[in-house]
Length: 479
Ligand SMILES: Cc1cc2nc3c(=O)[nH]c(=O)nc-3n(C[C@H](O)[C@H](O)[C@H](O)COP(=O)(O)OP(=O)(O)OC[C@H]3O[C@@H](n4cnc5c(N)ncnc54)[C@H](O)[C@@H]3O)c2cc1C
Image: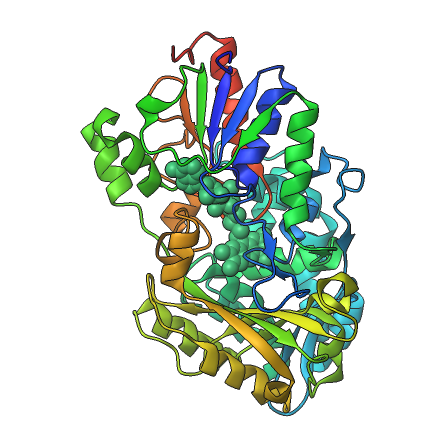
């Protein structure tokens, strides 16, 4: 067999995005995946009972919907139907009410009563300029924004801790709603930049929604593989790469790996300063995920939750802050902040007729092997009395098991690294050039590079652009 022009190690959304971008430039591309199916974080499986199909990792896809890379693919034609719930996310409280984010800022604001005007003021400009803001958020730092003023306005609030942002609101509902979105950062809510997570994800909810994929997120991986094959590329599964030198002498090598994965493959070839930098790369807390097969819909006390694709559980901002702070300090939260997705709201294909699947996870300390089923079930039951009676089966994946499932999820960190200020602006090392490794023709393209975690493919896209830039200047030839 001929030697391909480019080899990609790892077939997560970023590995496949890099492969597609290189293949579009006319290169012959081969992707090596260690697991027995492609997709990394985009896989769907019968984790509980026959006929119940659960997203193993990623389930909710606002980042994909706004991603310029994914917008370059005819997703519908490749079998990906994004289904947008009427309510993107909801946040129930103990009094039976819920904060709710819909496609309209005005509608969302109206439901927030006394905080409505403030909410509208906070989101109106970001929502209006979302394409411009997303272009910057989903790019490496060195790229100058096309509309610096709009980005500067967003950044001025985004750098704040989420707890400050929440304090600006008066009602428990508005404060909880913002903190629930911000807690996706997997950081203490008092940490800088956590407001940015809440702002950006909530703004996306207003513009593209928080869609789920009909049939499950495995369809995303299948679409990317189709796109690659249509360009002449190919993928090989069940092929773990353990040494960079064992790869075919392709001109380019793209690594969809964590810095720790790179050390395992190439430590001996890296200069000591890079080895030290990669050894010092910090990973965030892990997740413990519980998938449920249910006899029927979850009996949420707040009616709005019944139509929401995603639900943030944990109660008030103070409770969520306490849960996240405990995790960051290495303790298991007693009443964890949980993220729950209910695909049945928009997709009846996930379970036999009348039955439902439910996807849920909570944050836990890095590497934890704790099974959080009891705590997560208690949080769901708290806002949906009768939930436990509906459970037909469940499946737990602890943080430690996530790392065994996919070595990129170090300690169960699903975002490819801690979202500290330093590692948000500069990942994986303190260099403006995040994708080039100090090995000719070898590039990092995983979520451990900008723009970080999530299914958007932009790490792979930018890494491939960097490799093509070098190739055209004769600077990339490896063999
Ligand atoms: C429980 C969970 C929930 C999530 N929820 C969401 C969500 O709702 N929305 C969202 O946008 N994102 C979500 N994410 C995050 C998202 O899945 C990841 O950020 C994204 O998949 C990262 O893509 P990647 O290509 O960088 O790496 P990955 O998707 O992790 O892919 C890496 C691939 O490389 C392979 N690999 C690793 N080492 C080797 C090797 N040595 N040789 C060969 N192959 C190798 C792995 O098997 C894997 O297939 C979630 C993740 C998890 C785990």
